[in-house]
Every structure is written in structure tokens, then in C-alpha cells.
Image 1: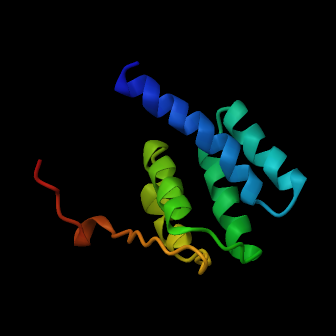
Image 2: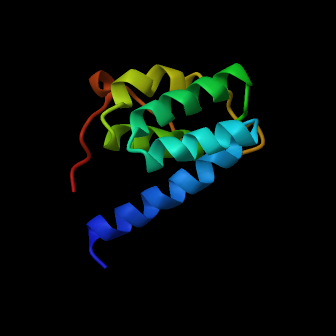
Length: 109
């Protein structure tokens, strides 16, 4: 399985897992419909808006996954501040920090 195929499988999984965070079945269905109709950008906007409006706590890992998805769909800069302002799930001990491009440094391999 190539890396493109692995990412595609990962993204499909994200589009199925992320709606479970949303406060209503209607929101979850709308999010899934955005993907199915090719409006991923609108789905990401709706997801972040609902998470913020309803103060849904999310883990740092989930926050990073949303950021990766936003990057894939060209929405990272537009959604970054919203994603970082989502309520942090305090029960999760992990910590992943998301930095804007102007504060990040490439990792040497």
C-alpha cells in the first residue's frame, strides 16, 4: 500500500470519526454531506464553528488531525485560529502544540 493510499484511508477515517464530535445528528449528517458533495472546505468550516459554539472539548490529537485535514484541503490558514481556540479536553494527558508557519522550524531528517 503506497503512502497516498495510506493517507486516503486515514482521511476517510477522519471524515467518519470527526462527525461523532458534533452536538447533533443533523450537524454530523451535514458534515458528511459536505465531503460526499465535494465541499470539504465548507465541512471544515462547519465543524470548527460547531465545536466552538457548543464548547465541545477535543483532545490535542484531534485538534492536530483537524489541522492536517484543513491543510490537505487548503484551509489551514483560514481554520488555524478556530482550531486552536477549540476547548481542550483536560482529561487527555497528551500534549501536542500547533504552531503557525512563522513560528515553526523544519525538522531535519
